[in-house]
Length: 516
Figure 1 (cartoon, helix red, strand yellow):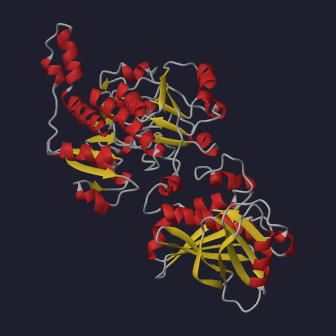
Figure 2 (cartoon, rainbow, N blue to C red):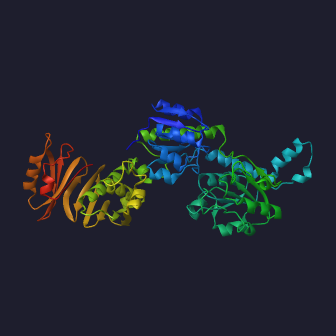
Figure 3 (spheres, rainbow, N blue to C red):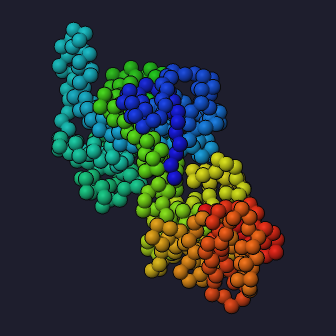
């Protein structure tokens, strides 16, 4: 699967390398920055790709006005300015550049830790103003101190490595990182309630989600060492600003270094003007190298999507991302094909579909195979915008529940059940193959490719002749398979070309026709 991108709008200031790379691959690019919401709504129907940084707010109103939009790319890490649920519902892929800003954010964090330890900005300003206040800016060494890192992703672990060179002890927490993994890069993993009392410095590197909003606040500051110092180069709101001001005024917090704020530009004067606070205007990713890197990366990700190579950086399209990987693309195709088939063979609309992956080789596919089957099941019921991004959302609206489970076993099989119909399939080579219908085996299997007619008959060859005789426009049967049942066998006939007319065959016998 590949995307067709003809025109891309760049609505924020990004490096010119972005447009150059897209244009070199035949994609028309227009750059229009500082558009109002109304102007963006008027412009967006003209484009099938959009690239933003943080200034453009891609709201649901903008997304719903986009009649052709396929991909929204964020030249950076955070996607707070994009309404992801609205994009997902319309089947629009949202992607970011997860690694492009890493080095710059890491270095900015380390610089902030050093500055807060030695009061460098305050001392600099004092001297610029004509004072020589050496005694007022007594600092502390970082060696021997404990740095707590909340969030041990790429940025958190690289901060740890650099601050270890200052002989700091590094501890940290991340629900997605195991203690064994964190130990590999020198961080002692601890639950947060054990981190607060041990930390001399705390730096946060998490997304802003309900679980992290106000993570450092009225309930956690009292648990920290008196004089703890905090750093935030991640997202405003992870540190509760009102609680931080109180902790600074009481001395419970000895200083703060902030690059991000709950409101930007910040309006909390009590925080910004506090003498213990050093702050920068969201500069974590503001290096020429990082901006060039994310511009090139997002453009390359668009090109890879167009060429059907990958959807690297896609954050709302797990199944679709796997559909472009050579090793998992056939599995996604198998899931979709079985979904289409079970939808057509079931006599009643499916309200519950059970998907079971079997065998070790299928264990990891449980993360995306349900969406693939769902997309196939709903193909006859949903609008043209149905795809692997929004299949589960359509299913919920239609009251269709798709449950996915896994069974251990030696074979890499996929079993799909809806109502009275059960299908079993497998990837053979790189092709989806149907092995069984309701326990009846096709032996070597039926390749789910091309135009196929499925029917039940105790006289399969007789009815095959009827089918072949009723075809129009020089269409013909080129392959035939039947199950091993003694009565009412399932049969499959493969046709040369798709057709809307089976010569009345479908009226004389239970049948289902589809093109995969």
